[in-house]
Image (tube, each protein chain N blue to C red):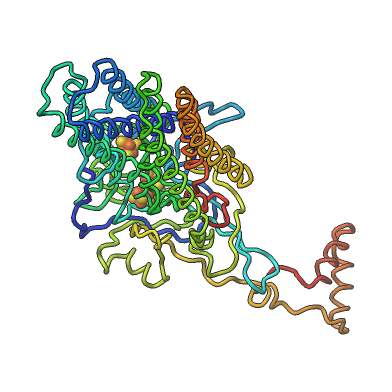
Length: 309
Length: 265
Ligand code: SF4
Ligand code: SF4
Ligand code: SF4
């Protein structure tokens, strides 16, 4: 599948934003009281900023961005529509939570209920992003039970390192947060490794003979394409990164995440190391998302010369 | 509405005969011609006269070669591919806007170009590559089953057929109601063993493909049934007569053909 940069930017940025938002809500639930004004406002602006940048990026690749509002209408059948609806709805409790939790408008009683609603909606939004891909039967590497967990794990891991980085800058850096974000980075590594193991083990048991229905006659090969230059279907669905490169990039993702864990531990001694850790984790998140597209083979490639899918 | 209608009793679709299709591209070009002025028009081309032309086509004719066991030469199968107007099309249910829909009255799957936002998700959901994005209009395009011809009262009844079906010079494309077991197309499918593409995907295509018939080859073609020259006195007499009666340079060739024994009948 063609890795569209707007979609990669959207899913990683908004994923990190929702992850951060969920964790801020968790902080609100566990502390039950307002944070300091500057820290509260900064972290809420970063979370909602990442989400908003992501949502705007996602409209860049639309043919008609001005009609984007129509995408909110088909939530009964479409995960893309559900994602849009959830994304918009989440703003309401999130903004209210931000106002009371940062202490802009003191209302201690409201912190916990608003935090719960915000956290749940944020996680549901990330889940529906994952579902958009996981429900496509045409792409074996996406139609996989791990897909949704990968989206959730990377959202929370990148959210956690961003929270650690912000906290380290504000000085008051609890040891607990170091271990907490390390734990999420490790969860992301494990989930991603399981995902890769699962897609590598999935049989590629459809052939050109199955696609054309001619396989019963004999071995089917491509003789002539219907056109002289690649068409939309080939450009959009035919993109494939070489296996060799994919293997290297997978190692790069894992190496970056492991280094992010080590740097986060180093932050126990030198708090600013958390910022470097965050940069590496975000980098790993973008690369793995790029691979998520580039490694995925669409079944239509069978009509265009692929031997198996 | 992108939720699917209840199963439609009427299932309009195409039956494509892979045995008679000669790959002439008449259906593809007439589809392009009709649909560039009809529903969801135009079907744009970019750089049509330069080195890198691209454009939207709703029907494309592939060519496959099949290596049959025990056969020396591969067999070529021409393979037209357009939307199959599936009964359970995820291309419709994934659409966030309602622009993609399946008609309850006849099962035709359409895109409304006025409400499509061009998110392309539907093209990802189609296993058959039937949807092509129109870069210049920012919307998705697909086969309309010529909905603007088949019900068109301005046409004579015999012209109320999809453009591709009308254009096919070998009669390899058939149009009709596949929901009616007694329709001509349904009978044809039953008689010739028509099949679904990628039934594993679970989309339940309405369009059917008729498999190529058993191949005529060295064991059953008429050419091979011709007697070979056997070197008898008669053979030699006729060869001599042929040589004497043929113009000078043609005789050498005639002999060559005769001796090879492969003169086509
Ligand atoms: S062939 Fe593709 S575009 Fe047509 S109905 Fe089926 S899934 Fe949808
Ligand atoms: S490209 Fe258009 S028709 Fe296809 S899913 Fe998006 S909005 Fe629906
Ligand atoms: S039915 Fe009409 S739109 Fe569909 S392939 Fe044939 S000519 Fe094209």
